[in-house]
Amino acid sequence: MQIDILTLFPEMFSSPFSTGIFKRAIDRKLVRINIHNIRNYTHDKHHTVDDYTYGGGAGMILKPEPIFEAVESIKPEEIGDLTTILLTPQGRPFCQQIAQELSKYGHIILICGHYEGVDERVREHLVTDEISIGDYVLSGGELAAMVVVDAVVRLIPGVLGSEISPLDDSHATGLLEYPQYTRPAVYRGWSVPEVLLSGNHARIAKWRREQVILRTLERRPELLDKANLPPEERQLITELKERLSSSSKRGQNDYDIISQIKTKS
Ligand code: ADE
Image (cartoon, rainbow, N blue to C red; front, side):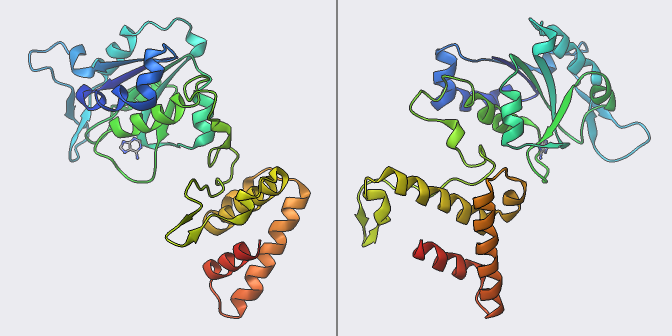
């Protein structure tokens, strides 16, 4: 995969991409990341990248010419395999499903917006997608681009190594991941759940699946409504919810009730 990032602050990308999984992926030539300084595509002596907004209003916006020229300087090998994305709080909300979708492209161009935004013609005639990493406003698209690149690169086959499967990640299945423990088996008196030490793989698998459902119910119940689950798990959720609602009528809060259910299972 080739990733081209257009930014006014190229130095922001030097450290994240030179460590950890990025470095490994780059060294193994699984991904090539090029950083382009938008300012290099200006033609005036002051290297102007922003200007006042027509019609009046506070703040400056990014001019279209340097952004168009920077994108046009990148020669895609195959147009069909390319997506050109603007990072903006107005974009579609980023999630694991979009990360998976993007990981199928051979070439991604990411444009980091700045100041009060970008000239609308960039949206209308240059980009093919717009992504937001959350309902808050960052001072620029750089951190958002890093988030997107991180989530996408780890899905490229071979990047995580065969021992780790991104298919088990929280959200990969549409639900949250089960709790995990490592040695020691007892730490400060807190024990690892007995089932995990049992060596009984069927019991462990069942326990983990129940934990996935409980944890999602506890923290992100709306994910369960969207998930594709077999009828017996739907039935389990209905029962858990009934237990929750009858217990809450008795004045207990959801968190206490879920801890009780977890202890029992
Ligand atoms: N630029 C500024 N805020 C942003 C956000 N929330 N997501 C993506 N790009 C941004």
